[in-house]
Each structure stands twice: as C-alpha cells, then as structure tokens.
Length: 100
Image (cartoon, rainbow, N blue to C red):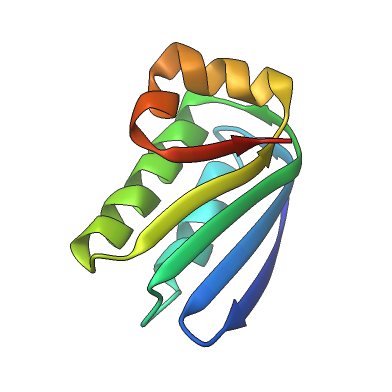
C-alpha cells in the first residue's frame, strides 16, 4: 500500500493505493494521526484494490477523529469490490462514501 498525501489549508486528501490489510493499516493510521489542524479529511480510494477489517478500523478511527473537531470526513472514488465490504459492514449508512 502507498499513501500520497496532499494538504492545503485545513483540508487533507490521502490517495490510498493497493491493499489496505493487517500489514498496511497501521501505516494509514500513522499518516492520519500525523495530520494536525485538519477540518476536512478525504480518503481517495480510486486505486484501492482490497480492504480488510483492520482497514475498516482505521477508517472508523479517522471518522471519529474528525467528529471530535466537528470536521468533515469522506471516502471517495470507491470501487465496487471495496464498496461491497463497506455495505456489508454498514459503513455506507454512517459515513459519506462515494463510489467511482
């Protein structure tokens, strides 16, 4: 997994590529936790191929972090296979998730 981070003003966009699994999820968590004074966090999953439950935990943690500061949180460009996992976990009912 690779993460490309773009920060402008109080908005951060993290482009996540590859597999978000048990091995790579902590890396995403570190990238998100390193962000400070962010009011809008966008995870771009346009190049994400796979997500495991550990990846879902990191997404939920990021969502909660943004809730604490009354910020915005969204996941964009989600492919059909990853969206299926979000639906199964019920994330599509709670989070702002946009498909490709």
